[in-house]
Amino acid sequence: MYSSSLAYAIQQDKEDALAPLREAFHIPKTKEGKEWLYFTGNSLGLQPKLTEKYIQQELNDWANYGVEGHFEGDTPWLPYHEFLTEKMAAIVGAKPLEVVVMNTLTTNLHLLMVSFYQPTKKKFKIVIESDAFPSDRYAVESQLRFHGFDPEEGLVEWRPRAGEELLRIEDLESIMQEQGDEIALLLIGGVNYYTGQYLNLKAIADIGHQHGCMVGIDLAHGAGNISPELHESGVDFAAWCTYKYLNSGPGSLAGLFVHERHAHNRDLPRFSGWWNHNKATRFNMRQPFDVMPGAEGWQLSNPPILSMAAIRASLEVFDQVGMAALREKSEKLTGYFEYLINQIDTDRIKIITPSDPRQRGCQLSIQVKDADKSLHNALMEHHVITDWREPDVIRCAPVPLYNSFQDVYHMVEILRKLL
Image (cartoon, rainbow, N blue to C red; front, side, top):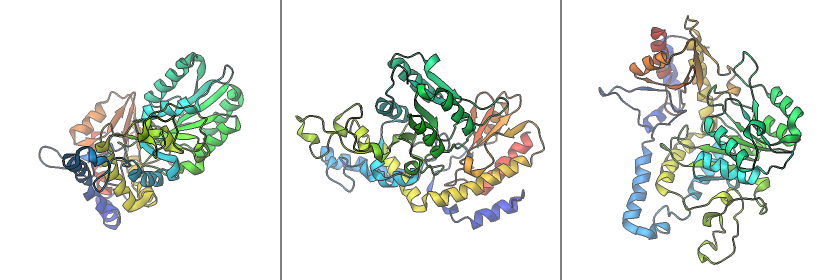
């Protein structure tokens, strides 16, 4: 199927219908003007060239309209978040009612746990992956403490088996069978940041719901990478950042999903602000709180328009091609990457990401034997940008929007020589 020759990579790029998308992004360059081999879209996505135009438009409207920019111009600020909703919903497989862009990732997780983590003295535990992203662990531990529970007792870890790197769904089932009466919430990373494993969201939701638990998903490494089909999965809520695969810029806003079965439940506990108040009476100021239905009902404040403009620019690019086409290319590109790495004659590295494309996105996690970060540093010296994670993994993500087969070929050739 694959070939290790440069000619093969060149031919694949010629036949790739999405190859022209690369021209829609700024590729980092060396001081000499040579393009870096950029494999860290799983940490910070590259800037779409359209971003500058969209941000400049809002700067111009601010200059020209002042406060009236909330109502004037091509994209008035008052409903600006609504310009993002349908395209974002399509990316994560949700209904527009279920999605809103707001705040940042961990803030959204806390706001969602206000609603969906309602512990009792008996049913109070929270399940996370043992190697969850640290921010998720900190958030969950602080929620447990806030409600008066000891994280040592209340935090349940879903762990890989001894000698393995990946999680097994049957082990989650065992946890729930043993402790389900004490577990209130499952908060799981849909794509694990460290291994790149893409977990079965529907299976997780079904297992949690069978035991009367709420189920939430951190999609930081999934949104714009895999097709999570959040609505069909049945999870209660999810949140994700937009600066990785969604290319919205450092520290940009996040996305939030709440399943439509909760959309009209006005009794759910939540924090309130004027932006989740009924938009028809929001500016009347002296009325009792009237929560909006759907995901919009978790908003608090009017959003930062310049950040949203960057998200809007990236979503335009996604909308041109759709997630189905991106996933098709991603599987080919990552499969080729895996093939070339496996051709290297060495015992110093191994891929710990699942080989099955249905169980991974575009990230491959390369585990380095007796690691001391020197291999990662050497790649950087050869103008290959990857991401190092302690204790021993180099994370590499060939992103289908802007990475090419030739990028993959040249990266692996450099890796081969360094090894």
